[in-house]
Amino acid sequence: MSRLRIIIALIAAMIAITGAVIMARPAIVDKNNLWPYVTGIIVGPTPEAALRNNPGVKNAIALSNATLIGLILVILATAIQTISIVTEPKRSDHQTTEPALPKASPGALIRAAFEQAQTRYPALFQDWQKIALRIGALLPTSQFAFAVQRDTQIDLVLRSMEDDRAAGLVGDHFSFAMEFQYQKYLSDLWVCSVYEMLRLMRERLVENNRELDLLAHDFTILRMPLEKHEIAEHRKLGGPVELFRERSKSDSSDTQMYSKGDKKRAYIVPTQISPRGSVVWITADAEAKQSRPLERRELSDRLHRLLRGLS
Image (cartoon, rainbow, N blue to C red; front, top):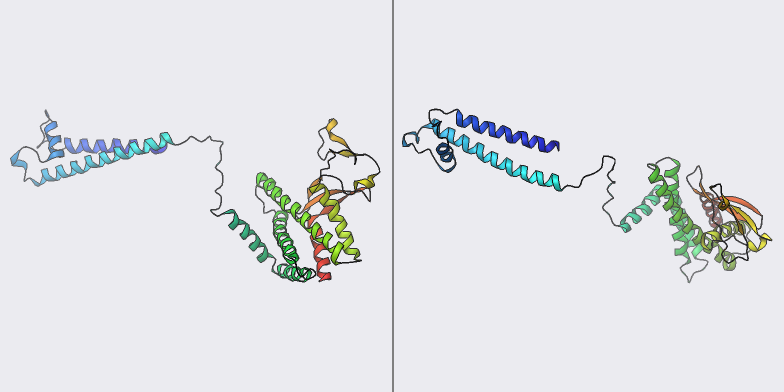
């Protein structure tokens, strides 16, 4: 409302100036009847013919006319400003303004994220491109090369997000949580897609490769709970297993029994953030009968070494 107070002060000043101009001319004003003089200012010269050619009178009339016109304009501006102030929605003192989103389409923003990641890791980007072409050539009449390229491109974006998180470049707590949620979305999708790549290579393209077998096993025990919501190779558990909640509620819901014969069986993979800013899944390895942490960045590095060796 401070703007309204300023406008009211201006109106009062204009009224005072108008009154001073009128009252400062006693030689041409009938103090007992000010109205003819005022109407003379608005519609024309004063009725006294003898004063028509008087320069002082003309100047006084011109000044008064300009002052009144200015006063009318100020009154109109005040009315418009008052309407805008009244109709403007009130905002609580504790309400914060949401940051403006970039004026770009989702497609443009996604494209910018991929291009930025490629520029950020130029050597790795070129290496991934070569690997995709060479591995894709193992299945020449297919789009296997494009599938490998897709997974490696997503890897670059994830590396960029991970490095920003490790460097503390993420904003406040809300931004930290939301960006990690989207990072986990991409990480989960990347795991499931790479799993299919490795499964195809083991079944049809590469034989007797110990490094491939170990990496495929780790992607298997990770992909099963992400997509099928169950423990991978749970038939090897031998019997029901007691699972514990990641964040305790100190009640009976902190534990649940997992049985391979239960059609409503479910397993949620606990997740953490590594010092490198990467997603870490705490997987259940039924074959080894133990829990194992798997970091996405480490899985990516192992995948890079494997495919580079095979290409």
